[in-house]
Length: 342
Image 1 (cartoon, rainbow, N blue to C red):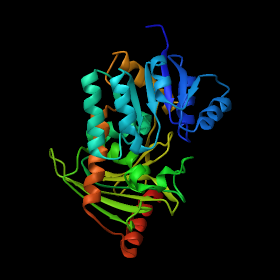
Image 2: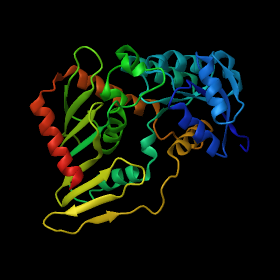
Image 3: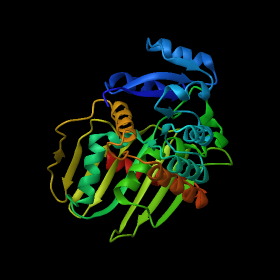
């Protein structure tokens, strides 16, 4: 048990650097391999961090030299890579989402369940202490019963992977809702459960959408909550969530060290729910959670089945989508920005 957990990374694009950093910061794991079909990318990643892992363009060359792998390849490659790992008895941490379709995600989960290996999904914002605290406060009705919420996240251009796979709908499974929105959808499901109703407004014309507004209703297990989430690749939006409760308004910016702010109704004071500690590097926390789960110390924070929920919700949203009219666009932006800036 004192031996370091050997990690390999499959896919050496932009996000892989964060996983490398998480491995290097952890005293519990050892980064032993990098794989990318473009070998120069893997070599450049190793040189950039001054490390000398095994480098290859083929997963088969790595699989006998690792205990687990991080799959950081495009979404449509998650299934074949994860199934290859299951066949060899190798644990996997899959960058979000688990797959581009729920069918592929389910196949991954079932393969690793049969193999008895760990499959976890890289929803790294779950490891932020403020998000963990927010879930506990909401579920315990610390601020009173939740009535509604509004979330937004937007940046000009959005996430730009080295391979530009996000411009190919067949590679991602969707547009901004998948590439940007999946982190919040995962947290929302973790905080409120599965919605009873959902609707999507977006600007897709057959390709990946650049702007999306999703609306939700939760009417399960005694809940009666309405919510909305806006995602954009064309407009920079202050990122965060506003939650209206029976006692006041709760604010949390979408940032690692952001405080949870609470403004009671009819009062000018604002209370901050401060954190005693804050996880310094969430990628380190995530990789250590993965290694510990593989060693049987506890269940992973986000299992494959848990990660599959956001893909199922995304598919439901795409099945009930409508054009994003300019009036809806302006109204949603105005409403959410008012809350974020209050």
